[in-house]
Image (cartoon, rainbow, N blue to C red; front, side, top):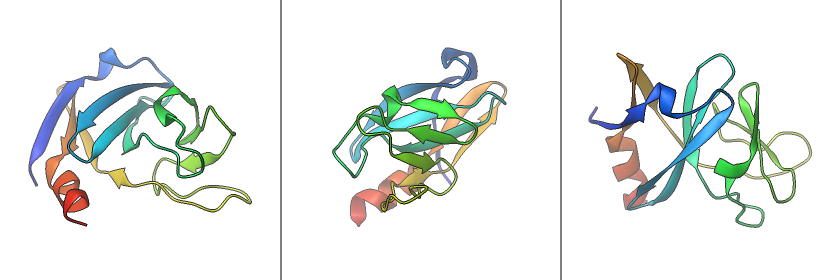
Length: 110
């Protein structure tokens, strides 16, 4: 895998997000209350809401426009809502958040 350094983990508050612009669109990097890091598409499939402005709870995020809830592990909408958002592998090394560049490339080829 090829990894892109997108910043220090302390740049994102607990239960917060950071937006990273890529050639496939914006990717939201989330940090949970347990300091876990997840990366997903920033766009809600329902009405295009900016998920990076949503509420992080557990390992989920709620869209700020219409309250759709997405699992940050799978990208799957939870509850009665149907839909899914792309997810991207991340890891943290020495406090730096790394995003899988190959996953971004695969998404752009699809």
